[in-house]
Length: 186
Length: 186
DNA sequence: TTTAATCGTCAATTATATTAAACATAAACC
DNA sequence: GGTTTATGTTTAATATAATTGACGATTAAA
Image (cartoon, rainbow over all chains, first blue to last red; front, side, top):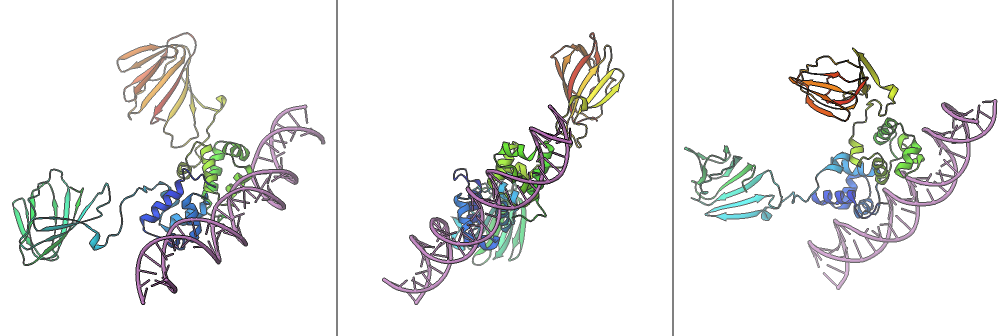
């Protein structure tokens, strides 16, 4: 039996499991051990056999070593319901950020909705990140440096963010864009 | 119980143990499990608990992950009796190489004995390795490029091997140096 | 050749991990 | 309220790992 203190494995397992929002029984079913085993391991009340952690690791598509070494810190949620996205609003632009509670993100992923006639402020970013996006609905005029173009549904863009640029909804009704930027500017 | 095939852990343990030329009982004593356990694990007839492999790993000053990931291929011996070192001889210089049967070495570690008046050939190495050494006995004149100096017992050196250099025994009787070079030039 | 020491293995016992089934709690639904 | 469903936990039974003690084989010393 393990010392309940310094319960490396149980802690890792619980973190990994909750990260995936799985119940003990679900992990048990997938890995081929019982829910009791999962419970006892997480509580640090047993020192599992190599067989058991292997099975459990593999059920997460991880090797044993990967299971033992992977970064298991709280990384924010994985799935987000539409209404749960963190929202901003400024001057007719509604922005929703995917994975808001994730720290050390490598990606800023946005759902952007522009009211009719609305436009983003002129973005002039010092860091040179890269950003891509696609228009889901409406007509967006994207101005990058001196270049300008109106993009419709299905059109997309890929720009370096060190060039000043702005978005403007030039169509009727709302316009919607999905965009990503790395590294994130916020 | 493990499948006797793909017995990762038992294989690793046996390789590691024999690499250190330890008996099962010796490993048992150091790690705090019994020799029977060692035997059964090596044979792949049990799937050890995490506690057990941890204890065993630690007895080799390895973490569990290190134990699971370390390169365990036959790497040559670890300990060498004085008379077992591979010896070279050229022009009054007796060289003994530590770990001669190790492959993919990162280090060339030498015991060098120079007869009175003997000197190494002028070393001019194309690759830029680094070499350090210490004089154990006698008087060695070390010439590096234009610089030259006589080193006595306890003196040492650290040079870049892309500069031509030579050793000469300028004292009475033998002179002994212990030196190391990385990456090894032979 | 003995004797003793050391090696890896094995059988029987003990300790422990794992299971199966119940338990307690909380949320959703009628 | 009662019922259902899902959660994590616990308990008693079972399976398995670990220990104890002995065995034959090997080696070295006497």
